[in-house]
Length: 242
Image (cartoon, rainbow, N blue to C red):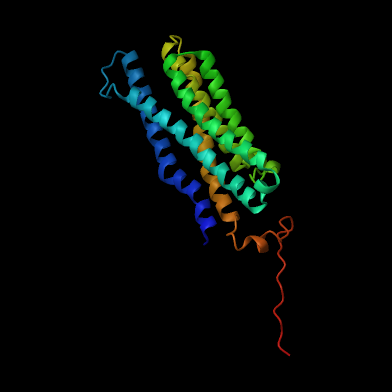
């Protein structure tokens, strides 16, 4: 394996070592929080610590940052590889500058979304959530990103992007959950995150599949000459000694 192959493993390694365990902890705290709430509603003294709700919110915030960061990292590798391989910086330097600015703007927008959550201002929360999501979408449609458009329903890119959008939206509505006495936002939050959990499971499956399909850098010139429709590859005949 060459350096570029090791760099390609950073994205799945962080997902396995950090993001997926964090998802498990968030789900565990979510179930405990719901169980404690139902017990209190029924008038039963709960043995679950009152801090589970606070811990769930803290870990949920961390999870959103981790998912968005992992998405940016997953997009940065193919975009950067395309820029270096096709020497885009020489032919279209302003495009490279634009891409870098979008990366920075997306990170800043996410940070401002966290800041807006402390002010309970719906307009700012909606604005920064939209800017964060827009940044991911713009970067996702840059050259070099493999999207599997013909199989969008089973695409690692589209599933991951949808999960990231759900996490951003869930973060933006957190203040509304605590202010809403009808539990409407809490129900929306629960439904969206259940969908996100299923998407994360899909990410684990599609990510594993893509790792099997992506060749090493030295194999690319040979593998990409194969006929993927008919599932055949040209095998050069060895020179026969006369």
